[in-house]
Length: 127
Length: 209
Image (cartoon, rainbow over all chains, first blue to last red; front, side, top):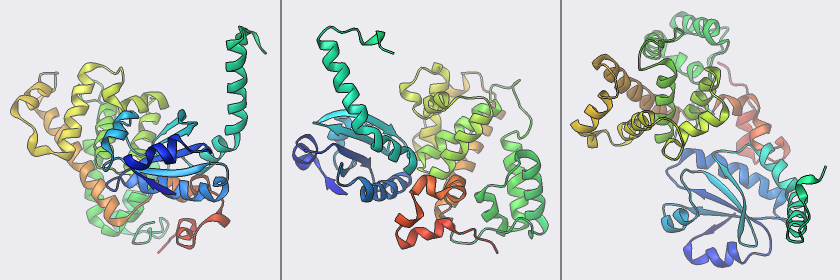
């Protein structure tokens, strides 16, 4: 898990080739310690498909505020610099794993719907 | 994992035994917190009686402004303010038992940004301040909460509930007690056991005296 700060954010998160899982945390937060354990373990399985980074909200309050962090831990997944998922509070490994394992198929569906929508196809009529 | 082992509920004696029996009767389970607190013997029995009286367990007190559910919400915000994962998990679960949906519990946790009643927001904001910076509470703030319809008795009870859960949050941190769910189903929370680093294997143990 890579520690990022305001200086490294653009390069590590916005400019990343892989989707980025950002753990917004703080030293003072016991719950964050648990979330960090879970993400560390998930990185072993998904580290080749996602980039795992963490941001200390006490050290980068403006960045946390910019991303609307109201409580920690909060985990946000970014793809091409755009937020795709936001999870607030401790998330169990199994729930996270399920999300990550279906991330790319969900993404493909989202992309296809977006393309169809831009072509004027009524996606609400699909089975 | 607690820094002292859990008391084996079947072998517990004296005050701890009576507390465990009472909890089984009331809740059908004994939490890891109380299985650890059981070491305090007869003192834990007094703590349990105090807890039950303050939280009005098992009776509901809907005739009062300070209902059983509101007491639990106060516990939830106190615990959140103190960063006590164990306690947040516990109070969320209790609120679920009182009929709140997962969404309603989330709204309580994020009360400042949710559409819960304004008076409840004021109470929970007061609770957060009381749990973290009690010396900053002004007479005016205290009066404002009382003016929402709480009696003097209830104002003291609110303070007692906050103080009790601040204390429990400290207790959980000192003894390093993990949420019950972690010990009941560690692979759900932490992933497959074969992927755990060595130090996590403590989560798999069923600690007994």
